[in-house]
Length: 240
Image (cartoon, rainbow, N blue to C red):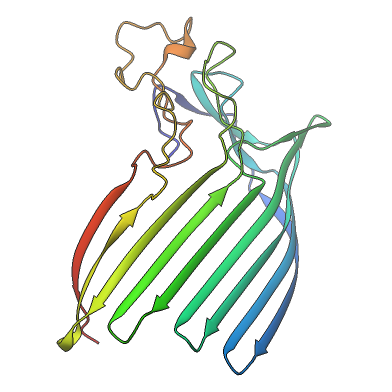
C-alpha cells in the first residue's frame, strides 16, 4: 500500500521497534425475553504508543517518509454494539465507535491522517419464511484528514461524511441451492473524480513533480471505493 503513485518511499535512519501500552474496559449485558434475545456490548479503550512508525506524506510531497515518531501517539475511544434476535425472523446488529487518534511530536499535538473520529456499522436480516431472506447492511464514516500534495493541491483536506449501504434477497431451493441478488452501494456514493490526482497521467510524463508536486499522480488520497451503485446476481450451492 505504501508504494503508490509517484512518491518515493524513504526510511529515515534505522527504525526502532514500536512499543505500546493499552487498556480496555468491557461491559456485556444479555437480555432474554419471550420474543427476543438481546446482547449489549460497550467498551472503552486507550493505547499509548512510543517509537511509533508512521508514514509522513507532508514533509516532502514527492516522498513517503517512514521514521520513528519523536514523541508519542495515543488512540482512545469508546465502542458500542447491540445484537438482537427476534422470534418473528428479524435479526439486528448495530455498532458504533467514537475514536480520537492523535500524534504529539516536539510538544505539538495533531490529528493523525486517514483516521475518522466516528464510524458506525449495521445489518438487518429478515426471514419472510423458510425460503426467502432479506439482508440490509451499511456503514457510515465521519470526515478524516487526507494527505495533500502541497499548498496548491485543489482537493479538500478532509473527506465528507459518507455511507455505503447494500441490500440482498436470497431464495432457497431444495437440494441446498440458493439464488441471490441485490444492489451494492445503494446511495451511489463515490469520492470526487479528482481524488486520484492526475489519474490520466500515472507516470507523470512531461511533468516536473519537484517544482509542481500538485500535478503528480497520487492515489494516496483515496478513502473509499470508486465503484458506484451496481446490481449483482448469483447462484450458490451449500455442500455442508
